[in-house]
Image (cartoon, rainbow, N blue to C red):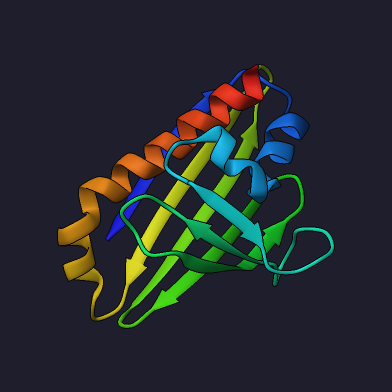
Length: 138
């Protein structure tokens, strides 16, 4: 199961990146997240962990597995039978920043999770992309 959305953001790359990695402020950016808490100290990067609470879903612990400062990070969350991976990728052109958010679910339980929560997950990924755009542009 894969969900993907790209939004163009009229803001400097540094601004979009700062909002993207400020995990604990995500609830101010989107209604799809009610609480987000870092589970470690120090700068956000590879190995960082956060617990994310979303309406209608159990809280999930996410661990950063790939990190390219100022450009991208991928993190994953594991639950019985499902590994969920979320990528956040920024690309810059002359006049805009494109933010691409993806969510992949794999494992024996992924088809059932997709059936039960696919519509909700797609809506949440869209809300997060739109929230990043709105927050970065304001």
